[in-house]
Length: 341
Image 1 (cartoon, rainbow, N blue to C red):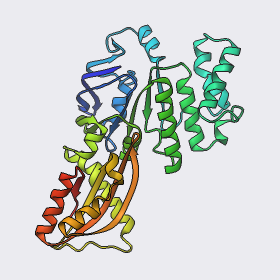
Image 2 (image 1 turned 90 degrees about the vertical axis):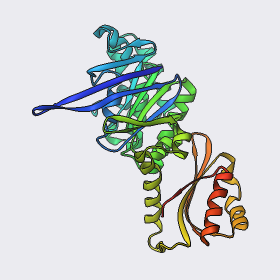
Image 3 (image 1 turned 120 degrees about the horizontal axis):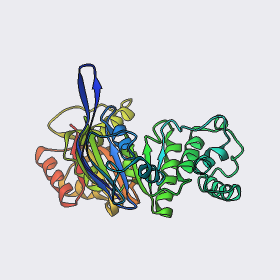
Image 4 (image 1 turned 180 degrees about the vertical axis):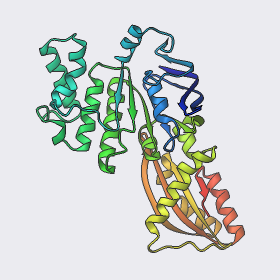
């Protein structure tokens, strides 16, 4: 559905140009949810906006459903853009129009539908996003989550094949974020919509994405299936996003009652479980076989898309030989671990 080849883009800055995207290449299959993750300033927003030529690259190609949009005329590009919906971090709603009118706006601008058709379409979309009772309300009276749902409904009005999401959940609280992600999953499954989203939160990638690309300073440093990248991160930045930030977050949460003492007889380990192993008594098995003891400091059970996924921060104690034996058992049992300290 989307093929990006050797994309380069730079901006003028005083006497020189600053390269924002450097030889970027990736592909997104039809119906996939593709996540692009990176820190602030990495180039992810610029990359997303390049996919519908809001940002114009200097070189490279962007092939959308078989058409290289970097080579076509404006009229052709306008038609293709109608099949690319966009969800914005700041909602981008018109405060002077009702929720109904915000969703109806793309149809009104196209001028292809009569009032009855517009009403039927908008009513069905408001129902889909859980806002059927709010059509008469103005954006100012809606919560952040409701505004984002309204933005999603508007993005679906023209029946797009592709949905681009620009940090759509970054301004929302965790509970609302989860509800928006569930809505995107529902839309993906119901319409077979291809979704490309950018985020700086690994949890967003875990919960709904099929594939992920990690971007740093305009370069994609790692990409692949979400499970592979999360369990076996290769690049330093990926490891930092997935392992270090998670372990630091865990340590902060337990800092009031726990402090790690660095000795040769203990390791601080982040353990990741995927699939059925998330429910197996692996720690008991390793403890009984190797003689180590475990202190579970923090843990959570979630999912990668629809597959069970668990993660724990544990302190492992024992002799050097016992510790080595326990780490070998993690490998044998296909449990991913990362030594934090």
